[in-house]
Length: 104
Image (cartoon, rainbow, N blue to C red; front, side):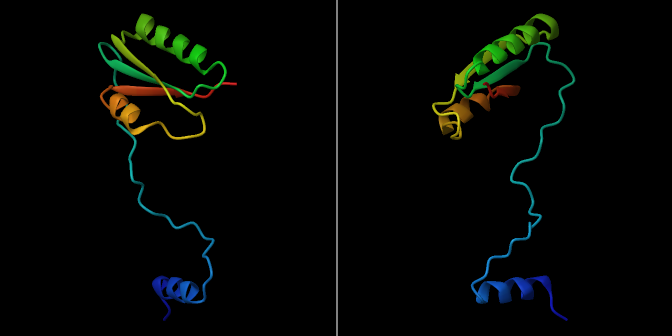
């Protein structure tokens, strides 16, 4: 009986690429839902596309005014298509939650 591992090994030995999606364990898992935003610190990541900052400012104000968010940290990526710099990720990781927006 041919196993899945045998099949993958045969495909690799032939120099072929297996186009199937392998269901791998995710590197990250979603955070548990927050019960409240009261007293929490929110992180806001702007991707620098047009109007992303406007959207994030409106969300930040609403979360503070209506849901009790106490502090916020706003950061911007240098290039919208690239991942955020590690130091930005480290800063945002100190927040209780993070919101990001894509403008245009």
